[in-house]
Image 1 (cartoon, rainbow, N blue to C red):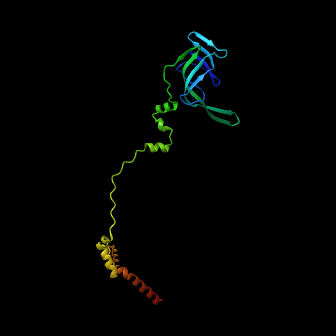
Image 2: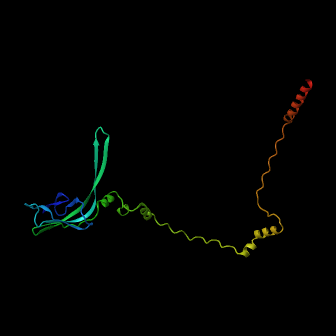
Length: 224
């Protein structure tokens, strides 16, 4: 048995078990939907045409999801005017599973079970993604995927603070106290600067050159 129904200003030919996509309808996933506007009913070789509707006929369906359809691009152009406009539109649509047709006291039902898996989840599975974490914020996904840090080994106990008696018994402290009493400097392991290298003595010839030049100048002055 099949039927032709009208919904959203359009006509659809349906039979039990068909997956039907129509204009947006109100309802939650899993809700039952009934179409009373049956225009034509066919059962084998018998065809009943409504005037305009078939009396007592109805089609039952189960709502699977309400989603956005495929994007439609609208491009406008006016030649020689430099006018270009591109727009997009996604029409809201409802996905249904036809479960039965009732007409004239006769009812035809679909024996299968309705699967409420959405198209988005099916696409995610086909691409190898986890749909449960696909729509969560990135921060939540990162926090969920991050494995808990392993517990570190027991921290070493911090060294206990020395008591006053232990501090006084320290030989370094004793030496410092004795030096302070005698006003003597405390010996420290300061690094001593390396002694500077002595300048190499100049050669005798180089040392005599300035004196010889001065003597020559004096002789020139006396000759004048």
